[in-house]
Length: 338
Ligand code: P6P
Image 1 (cartoon, rainbow, N blue to C red):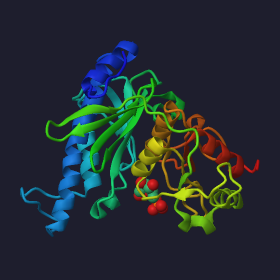
Image 2: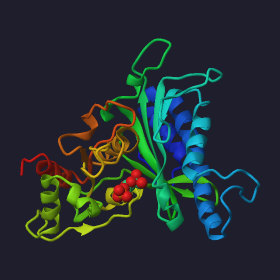
Image 3: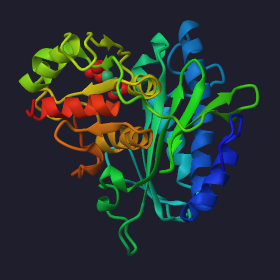
């Protein structure tokens, strides 16, 4: 099946099931529930900006409902919708300390969902794009109880991953292991249409995304790489351009389409976070799955990120992700080989 621009997401999911029988039915139910949640989050994100500008007080909105912080709202919405889809045996959220079990009243399934319900939510009131990131694995353990080890999987074991981007338009970008497809929502009909079939990231591009305010907290190897990018003796012969909005999904999406490297290195700013800020299960592994499916690469700075074995559900790891040649080069510097 050759994906045609304008194809709906539902058509695309059904076509995926033909090439991926393991995903027949259950998978589409899971993704369709996620899509409904994303449409509702998209509406709330847009209204939040309006509410802010109209100066509503925080506690009660125009419908008289209790206003929750948007990331709490997004987390609760995804949890409530997905727990009843009959396809999941557990979930884990960047917003929730422990594993999220499926209530007994709902049918359990063979998949687990890890998600960051609203990454970058502090950017809402300055109208910068934010996103929802998701990762799906099949259950590993047998027996009546889902184990934490079912969640603590290296990213290579994901069966699907992707993100929703709430920006100038709402997009969904995802992969089930057969390349990366991007869909743009037409708000007038509330449907996602294929706008970016078979996304491929350039092998190299003159863009880097990093918070250089952390420069003094980085290792000498990371600083050496940053200085290399900003010099003229790099592979392109000109200083790279810095593009950084401080919203991972927005920065990643731009680099996926235009190329370049996003990095959040380990730093010694906060002894409690020696491996940097970003979480493996909800941010790094799903985006690494997508970027490799698009021909790119993701590294912890010491090796392939998708092969990293997380030790806790909120494990943080350093992240270097984007164009393959750029990330390989970063890994050579950061691991001390250059
Ligand atoms: P810093 C948002 O809070 C986030 O988790 C990511 O979306 C973003 O890439 C990163 O943190 C920005 O962190 O330290 O540069 O503000």
